[in-house]
Length: 289
Image (tube, rainbow, N blue to C red; front, side, top):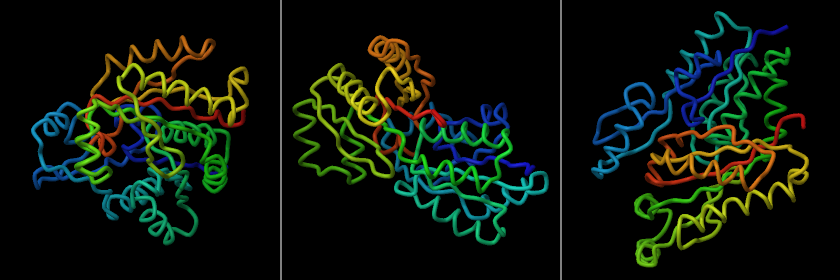
């Protein structure tokens, strides 16, 4: 039986401390803030990041260097037979394609999973990989299973401000100005590898209901219905923990018999594009259900 190491990046929302408890490795995503490089969860905390964001610092996201990826793999392969590497969605970053190219030199011992997930849905993929490795699956088998089920999740995100979507060029200044004037709360969705507009709400309460309704619709049409209990429900937020906890209670009331699994902080590389105060609700199909 192959001994398989599981690797992901900090876009999964898995901290270095949690990674140690899970027995996995997490590559920290690098950031440049006012010309200086930082690493998520290593030299940059969530609190420090939002302070920089508040001060309108010049923040740019990057991907782990090829050297850091290769060095980690080589180190793990001294102890493990194989590595399964689960980066963030290839549609949202180039780090997945870079890893796939780097893996070519390892003769199949490193398998890179392109399963189009990020944040809490990516974290669920990592948990699945850990469980499959314990069950004796090879890195290649784990990759095949995770890629086969890659689209079996949904995320809906409500942003509190349009400032950062405008700054990143995802909406025009005119749309941002109108939205701000009308106090609109856009609801975005991540289905597979794309971040798209889904709906608009006038208040955060309306936006929360929109996300609940969207998840209910997905459960009924894609995941066997509410009674099937085939999905995990998870919440993420950007510097908005108290409201996220309140939202957790609302979600559990809306879906009797379900419990919210995680209430996680969204990864900083997502946060810098949407700002603080955001809430997200995700449904991820339970593997093998």
